Length: 401
Length: 193
Image 1 (cartoon, rainbow over the protein chains, first blue to last red):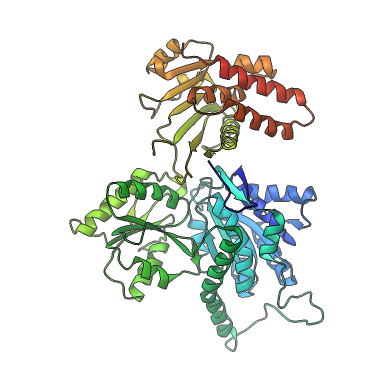
Image 2 (cartoon, helix red, strand yellow):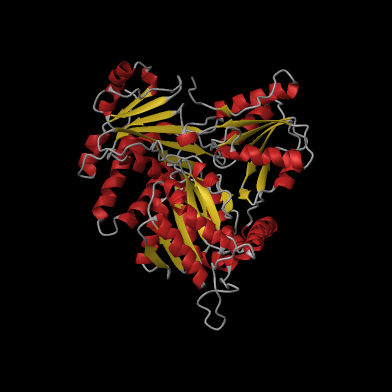
């Protein structure tokens, strides 16, 4: 029998998009500016209905492009408002210039981002290429395995962003989560509002008593210091995200960390993955554990800032490790998550694990338990020394000539 | 999949409500205390084109997020799909197919090339026409599916559907009654003969 975790929680069947819109309704930002794009359209569509029905006091700005959406959102944030938006794929690509500006201006904009493949070829389905392309823009990135996490992450993101003075995006896998109806527990409006608190910016443009300039030109004299501060803010955001998760657990009862360890502590072989595939992989881990195979999983939740040191420590005892990327880097070498995991291990002196990279699921290509089981099977052979680890990217479920 | 998980595949045509049926079914089953998933297969959205949607039901939290390839139950809203789509794909010998048709289970079994014990039929189109006033088979098929699955609570399902429809059709109470009667009738009339 399903039961809420929080004493005042309410269970409902909702899709990822519905629940992200619900979180936005409860957060009730001062300003939302957005432009529709599949598969994220519903989030702001549902939210705009809340605005039209008078359920929120938010100023909704229907803009003419995602570039404008991000411009308007960050401008509202600079003016002193709590501001949010939502997008996906090409929309995020079009925002790219303004993503960097939101981060550079240290504005705590929060965005619901539905992970979708990027063109060309045109494809509307789920992969993480869009957000991975924005991984170094100075945005906090929190990925969600399911609808519950999407809801919880949205609420936490507001607090994390405002404490860190950094913009934050919360993502779900396009269609797989955004359009999948699942059981989600939501919390009462007043409890969510109390958790995130009132937004009190330290400085803002409409503060006429303390006027200041944002976004001025800085050449060789100051630019570097401010970019260092941005990078340092991202490093400091790790502790903030951990603290907010602790507050969240204390309030609502759900435990989150920068990453989730699933049967990892005594694992000899393990997979590192982001997003909805972690849930599918857990089923495979359970099946392998029943057979006595010491399989484990590490799911990265907060990808930016990247918890390199902690992850390295937790992977130190694993003999063979596969990093599964739902984005390719077209770098001529490894995909994004692998690169971060491999450098985290190396920098922390962990060289015992054999680490291989797989790219999967581009454009919504199916990733099923049998595909993941094959990866664990290969890891078993690598751990036993009967198979040499591949030194290049491997691909799952793709036709290669 | 774990032994306790039930997987369902719906076959319909664009506009026929296969997606809505899966969503309604999931909500209704959740109301009886189970974990659920409902998701459609997304492609180009064209009226009349073959479409599929899916459900998972379990007593335990459902973490799997891959497609449904070996459903325990297949629901066919439009019998003409059996001519062009391999609706029995991936079902095991224990799998059940529920078809909206006026033909007998025996005739459908022959057409699909599966055992008669696996086939259930109900004339959902006719039930919908008589109860709702329109040939929309997705709502009565909910009742048929609940019956064939067996261990679901039809009263819980009816209660939840009533609540959902009461919100949606607050100004058209006759629609609510018609839909509920259609579910109950299909529940009673679905048969393996």
